[in-house]
Structures are given as structure tokens and as C-alpha cells.
Length: 166
Image (cartoon, rainbow, N blue to C red; front, side, top):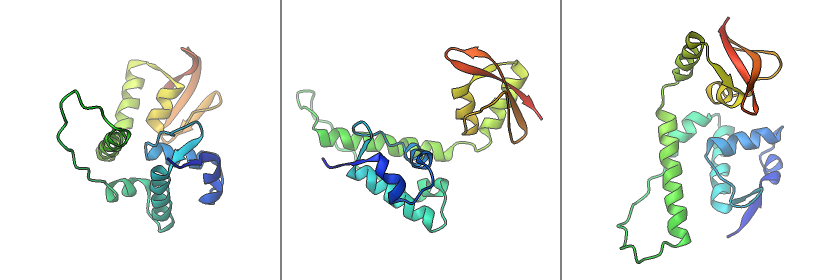
């Protein structure tokens, strides 16, 4: 299998930061096949996304306009060993399902979760805040939209964040 270094993608797509590359990889649910490397199939997906974004599209409408259909074949008895191609096809199917589920979720769902955190007085970890708002909070007080995140004690090995409505 031919692999491509992730480090070369910033130049390939003329992006201003490495984070932009990783945001695209994350959005497409791509797992590197080796440390810092992606497969030619994964590169093809990123190329299609880049073309879509250049033509004025967004990540959200790319996912819905490039849904892949996979044919599921009957599974042989347990004595048959799955090939690497079978495993790759299965993983691609799982990725397509995950993209579809992610594209159909309620876009306001994170607001309800933030309201619940405020009402319950929960302290959220940095990872939880990032999952809800899409960015990692920083500093002692971080503002995003109608919410403020105030740094508190630790939650595990991460900073804890109390949520307030502005």
C-alpha cells in the first residue's frame, strides 16, 4: 500500500497552518495508516474535500453530497479469514455511517448541553468543552458565542471549566 506523509499536505492544499490539515483529517474521520502517514484512498478523500472547499462548499455539505454507498456481502462461515481488503472495506463502511450520523445530528444540540452544564453546576474538562464548541478553550476566561468558560481546578489531567451564560 502506498502511503503519503501528513506533513506534506499543508503545501499540497496551500493551507496556512498544520491545524487546518488536521481539522480536515478529523472531519473525514481519517485514521493514519502509520505514524504521520495516510493511504492513497485517504489522500483521494482529502483531495475531493479540497476541491469541494475551493469551489465554495463547506465541510457540512461535503459530507452530505459525497455519501458513499457500500455493498455488504454475505459473511462466510467463521472458518474463513477476513482479508485486509475486507477489513478496509468494513472500516470505510463504518466511517461512512459515522459521517452520516454526524451530519444528521441537531446543530443546536451543544447549546442544550451547555445550558444543562450551567443548570447543574458541572465542571467540564477541556476535552468536553472542545467537543461541545469545536475549539479548545484557553486563558483564565474564554468567551465563545453567548457563553463564558472560566478555568477552575483540574478534571483528571485536564483543566476544568465552569460554564456561564453571558
